[in-house]
Length: 296
Image (cartoon, rainbow, N blue to C red; front, side, top):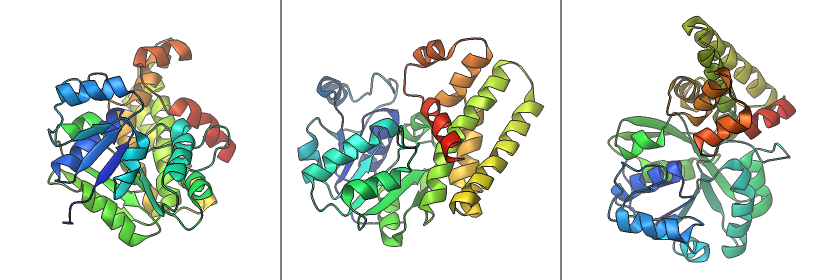
């Protein structure tokens, strides 16, 4: 998959945003990473490290850093939002104000809108207008392994096949395979719901309930994902691929997963607040569990 380089702006300088920005820059795209902490961005630019999230991973010299959102949005051909789901609506509202008429937006955020439980594509449609095209990047992908150029496969879902291909081409690399699909609903559900199931699996492992229990939780959890997906109009094949099964297996079994680590801490007797503090990063499942129950 090849494409002409395009100016890509990654909005969100956490671990996943940093990883995707580094990937795009290595692919030859003029890439800018935006974040709200100007001092942190300056440090990343000087050290070529994200010292908070990916300390031992070197970032490419070609990656630019920009603390001004207006400048970032104005100079980009493609915007890729990579912030926690609770911050998604606020950021997209800012983007809509700064880039009126924006008709395409991609994101790699996973979860639901806080409070309402709406899917992120519904939030984007409200803020950008129903004619705007959305795309979600999802699948089994630990940020650290992407920065380390370890083999990774994800999927980009959008109702606009050309836009999905455009986003995928910007990210596609010898060690990063980006597939495409058009089931935005199923892809978003899989990316959100697997986080909750990863906590459950972590709890079981933290309680040393054994590998049988882990396998049972993953399998029955996938079944619940499929049932809810069918009820809301998603396609089963989406959840049997990278956006569902793949992401679930990785998040439920890999100790780089914040959601799994939360479950492990809970299973070993820590209370929720202490477990979240120990992880030190956003744990999407804490909010997502309530929103999944509301949706169900």
